[in-house]
Image (cartoon, rainbow, N blue to C red):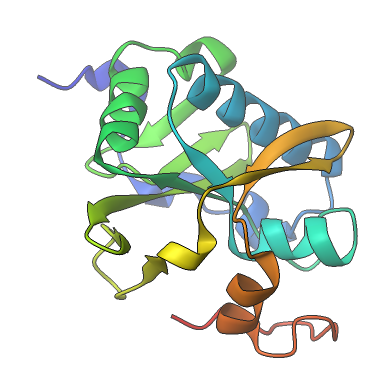
Length: 182
């Protein structure tokens, strides 16, 4: 049974936060990133910075100002279970983070939004569990490695250049409003 007290009623409750403003409040963005990763690490879940968060970390050494959320990949069946368990056990709530009811990816802290994308195990990689797009993490991205970002070490994909090229094409060129390819 889901511990409903740790969930927001709807993803609509998150609108008007980071989606509307972008990541201009970098301290709030840093807080939700650090807090989500603290929880994932405390339960032994495998994760990587992903999408715009990883792009900003690698290219700019900071958040991308026109990005609208924090992106983290939760990798593998066991890690996804650990992430869900952390929601159910109130570990995110202890840090002021709630999840969208019925979802396992949408997290919010104050008015800052984070996507924790779940990837299930497959032979030869991991497949996204979110239904709006098919997206696979291939073997060449593993094992994960560590990268310093914002004065802290985070797990990231082993072949960051390959990942970013697949998602953004010429990722070294700043293009406002350009989103990842799925």
